[in-house]
Image 1 (cartoon, rainbow, N blue to C red):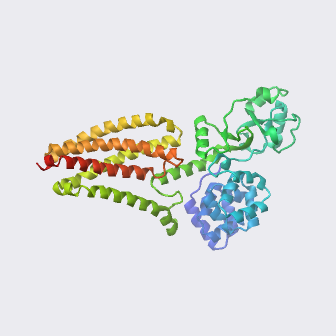
Image 2 (image 1 turned 90 degrees about the horizontal axis):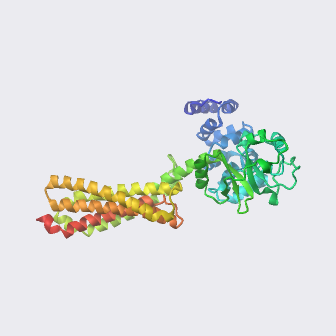
Length: 466
């Protein structure tokens, strides 16, 4: 077990050594610590130093370090490597990680790189699928057991071909024509790669060596389609506490394996994406990103928010006479809008999360709406009564108290409606519910909150003035 290191302190020492030209010493330091720590130090070095360090490390160790970074970071770190050098590194990487890196390159450069690689055959199939799908994150199946093997033959096969502990997560069994053909380390083709079952290592050890796998394997197993979204795959592994899941096509042919360690970065990326989208920001926005990129990823949403704010102002302007007659309305109306916005964002956040986790579907709309409307009604009654009492104690005007209390109740019902309707409508049209929901919910509660409060105030203006 490699102990974690203080990477900030070590990075300072590494930069000093590199300033003095001691590249070999730095390479030795990085080889002695965990690849996750090495990757953090390497990524934060100046680009010229990154290339110097990479060229001092064996390619398999460079691969281990790069696999701890996301695809954008990998692409930045390897910029100083030549095409043949990068091809050597990719040959040592897991196919899914190599595919992620190649996906960040220009099309011409990616094609040249694949021609240069020796292990391109394991990467090319992954590039055919979207990067955020099961097919885009899976690893190609290596050495699968075959249903006509005996338990003894299977154990011998494992001893000969399974040299990585990760291969023993689960032992999948595929269709086989020749039960004695156990020497080939390649996947069979055609009907023989159809997934038919799963067997545990414990079962193999305890089984009669002459027993066929088809007699001891479990034929019931969970699979995912090649086009399944990576979030769906993550939910499946989490729900059933799996370490890996096979990826199949419509005919149940085994195309790849997604292991839990393939999804750790996926979960972080998806969580980051959802958080950024709820704040109307691109997931490409990071701290200390170049100013042009920061403007490009944030300005469009700020401009959209400006548009909704102008609509809210236009609604308020329609009641300029009412506000002029009863100036205290200007101080009170933000309360109704703000509380509605908070309530709407609460409902919206719950719905977005529930949709992301698969806890609700579009068909559940009315059940979800009834629940949130009930919650909004009770919240509106409670807070509306409190606000009405405060306004009455402050200003002594029962009509104004009734108006603001009623507006509060009405806006909470609006908040419940848009908090449910906006994300589920976006999902209905194939748009990520996190994208724009917050802006649309806030805009709706602001506009309708102002309209409710000022409209009621205008209707009862005689009572307010009197």
